[in-house]
Every structure is written in C-alpha cells, then in structure tokens.
Image: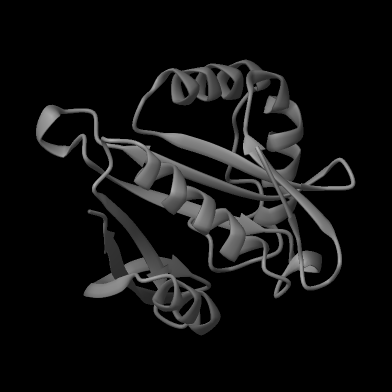
Length: 178
C-alpha cells in the first residue's frame, strides 16, 4: 500500500485489490468502459459476475507474477492496473498490463503512479524481467507517459482494434528490468 499526494493536492491511495473489492471494481469497470475509446472493451462488453471477479482476484493474489492494484481517492476507485505474468516456465518472467483511470481524474498523475507502482513491484521481486503493454497508436498522452517511464517502442500491431467502423493499430512497448 502506498499513499501519494498528487499535483491536484488529492491524496491517492494505491493498494492491491482484494476479493472484497470485486463488486466495486466491476462497477468501476462498467463506468470506465463508457468513458474511453482507448480500452479493449466498451460499454456493456465487460460481463462478469461478482463471484467470477472474486475468483480472478484471488488467483492474482495467489500468483507470484501477477498484480492487480487500484487507485483510491476519498474511498472511491478512480484507477486500476492489471498485470498478468506468463503461466509457463519459459514466459513466467514477462507479462502485459492494462491501466485505466476515470475520465474526471485524467491528467493529474494517477496512471503514472499506478505504472510506477507496477515497476517497483516487479523490481522488488525476482521473477518479472520484462513488462509489456499495447497502446492504441493515437493515444499520444499515454505513449508519452510510457516513454517517460522507460518503455520503448518494439513494434506495431496493425488492425489491432476495431471501433465505429474503423481499424486502429497498436504500438507494442516494453520495459526490460535488470
């Protein structure tokens, strides 16, 4: 668990998600899905029961190479990051994350703090040696943030997302850890 004072003077709490957060996390995801076209899912596409979410969160907590964290302001989930490490021995050292922040909290540093928390968690452990992500090619603010945090462009995934009759490519980025 970590507390951060944001440039907006909001106190941000970042902590691992636990089973008891399942319903609030589902509600957060339903809200965020209607706010951004940069996610891999849209409004009404994330259909999971509280029990299924609880099981997923328990599995992540039991894993030594996966992480789910939430960002909280005034007891409200305002951001989420999920990192999933590989399941087989040859890919256990690497994984991919997704991050989201409620629109009313964009541009005050929450996404940056979530990714920094992930990097610190990976560096403090002895398993994760590579963190990957995919970002839509026109999400320039996110791309700049990832570059500032040390991620490097590794390739383009063409026609990766389809939205409103148009295909979008994604940039594959990665961060190698010592």
